[in-house]
Image (cartoon, rainbow over all chains, first blue to last red; front, top):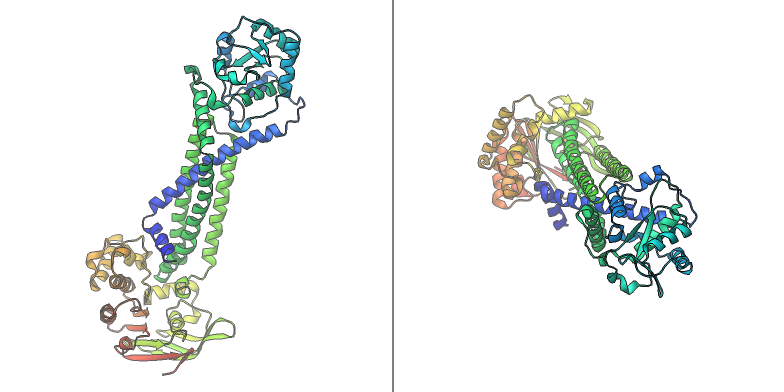
Length: 349
Length: 217
């Protein structure tokens, strides 16, 4: 108990380190929270996907879907599409993805590739950097692939996503090493495209991908690295999240319930009016609260800007909710303080 | 000055803490209240210091009935007339010594400079004039209690009440604190101190003994 009291006292004498520590933990938790939120949102979305063709790509949908500012979607911006269209023979890594989004359902892709092969669309030559391999069948003829895709999927215009160094994936020769996406003004079944794409992603572990991304893809590279950092330190973030909740609760609870109650009593006994003593504490607590919230929020905005390029509405509203909860707690605490016997000093020694 | 008649008090129903207390304390008198733990000393002092209400009986101060005062008036009355010193000092750790002593002046019609001067005077009176910028955890227990006394004196109250003000101090500091309290109580002021130390109590004009909530002598 003595140690606890010494700690509590220290919080008031030199509060800055404690508030900074609390802020730091809150910030980490907010960051982690936004990260988990997005990952879970993606998982939820895929889990809910029963395989039916639920979406049709329209220009508007496409515009929404291919939005670099939307962290819930994969990132394809105009520069990538343009690059692909112009340099399809020399494909680079163009994909940033989140580890949590891996889907191991390649049935449809295999079916698709099988069809390509069985229909004779794949033969040799032409496009060394792009090929499809399935068992012993290799398909690297761009024109034939194009035709096959058009035949099987009914897609007229498409973009191929692939890797520049297929030797890196030689161990996965049975897997497809590139994938296609359709992108134009026509309506295509998103499900087909997504499944192919996600299956491709599931085979393509980000950490194994050679980072030979051109400057125009710097932002994607950055995201990929940041995602990998998040994954790598996931346990750290989880622990920080739990510590943050505990530590913040401790700080608020004890500073308000214990010391402020004490201070409230001391101020009143020494002649300050009820309102004056109360306001003094209220101002300080509100200052602390707003500082914590403000710094946390700014940090969250910064992180979101760096990682996700924008502030998702959902996170914004969640943060507002968190603030509201903290505020309610604060109001509750002060209502308790006020209703308590102000002569705490006398009766609680 | 202080007149208490038929005072009864209990924190819980059917568990009386003070029973039929009748007491007169004159202006300029120094009084020690002694008794065992749980005898009701602190409760009696708290009532006299207008820190507790909900008691039965009459309590008047300077012929003014405390019972008739509203909560706001009681706070004002206490601030103007009573200075309190506690065993635990109760200094605010994040305020300097000077700021702690200035606390009772908060909200009064003094300029900031006047408040600082009053607080410095009060600190000087208890020999703590050199510690104005120190924090409570930077001074000794005896010095902290002197600061608490300075805080109690800063509004020049007519009565000083101490709840075991020497309880946390060694003998030499204890004597010094009692002397300071007696020295700094106004000529016509009253000093009421709770103590369990008879050597302390003997230094007062009168000793009131409490036993199980009743005055025994």
